[in-house]
Length: 521
Ligand SMILES: Nc1nc2c(c(=O)[nH]1)N[C@H]1C(S)=C(S)[C@@H](COP(=O)(O)O)O[C@H]1N2
Ligand SMILES: [Mo]
Image (tube, rainbow, N blue to C red; front, side, top):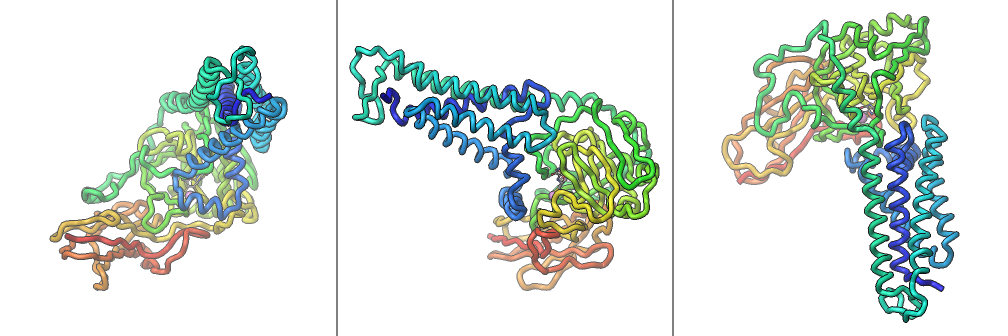
């Protein structure tokens, strides 16, 4: 007998999966270090998809890549739930097995990451499977049994002719329980997510007292920010700063438990606690960082005031061994990025950063500590949630290298047109063309603008400030009605003109002129 129609069964299956997943998330949020199985599956995908697919996701989805991945997992889970619900009409036991298998998948994905504690991971899986199976039984076995046997079968079901047996009353109850279980599951899931860290990090950050730097950045000269409406400001506020990383959930690191190991090819490996790190002399520096995945004209670049401990004295204290040609930053989440040790020694402002724009690092930007190295793309240098600095030879590869990215990642000289905005319509007459250009460690010496097929015209540069910081530029333009194509190119402090050779972001960063199209009316 099949007392529940196919459509209702599908809904019941979705409710069971929602309740199971939601309660698993809640347990993950409540039990310290217990993993979210949804995020574990997501992590598993991120770590195991082929490099080109991951690059494609970052390129086309940008910072939306994570919500899209999680959304995809949830949609697939719901579909799986619907199938299980329908299977439960034939065999509730088999469908329960399906839920158990589903939970097992999450547990296996989580245990693939050896930082997840085994017992707590299994606990999350058991709760999820238990609640899911419980809800499925309640809906598919418990409720239908209560249908009064003597009442005639109603026709409310969506599968006429195959003996639907629920009375209208029971159907209402069935739908109420189904909807209730789904809603509770979703709420539990959201609750678990919230419990899992954000609030906690806010408290941990608020407790940090930043020491005064021994060397301050600035002062920023008047005229370093042209303050043209629509032009990117000199400093990007933390909340608006671009964020790129492989972490589906921001690691929650309590400074009280945090340690930084300096190890590998050194004579005196040592460990610093957060308190010890904060006692070392700190510098402040304004540095523009950029992502290798930034398309020409893209937003994956930003400038901030960083504060932290310079790398050089940290390395000198460790005593570098011969052949220690690479510095690898390792994150608490397993991410790694490596660059030449020489860069850490030569570039004075390369640092273990603890603050960004005057505040302890935001959670998304690496709290409590990260690396910042002027002149290098983030994927080889800017390890967030830093846990170790390892000195190795050049043969060891950081996270992105086997995934198809270049071993060395110097930031290419680039420029971007901010004003007029992309595909903007502007009024005829005098109007500014403005943007930013960057070549950290080399600085920007010149920016030129070309309108249609005209000559390259030299733009006015913002007051010189710091070679590590992007520089604003502006060209006043007598805009004439019609459609116009505007291109820009920068020349860096070494005299190198930005190339017009268009290359994709992989393997070592996009190149080519930024070009916009404007309609003047
Ligand atoms: N732990 C960790 N650190 C990381 C990454 C990451 O995936 N994990 N991504 C790097 C990359 S590719 C870039 S471009 C920068 C971005 O730093 P932001 O998010 O603070 O802008 O962080 C770097 N540090
Ligand atoms: Mo990046």
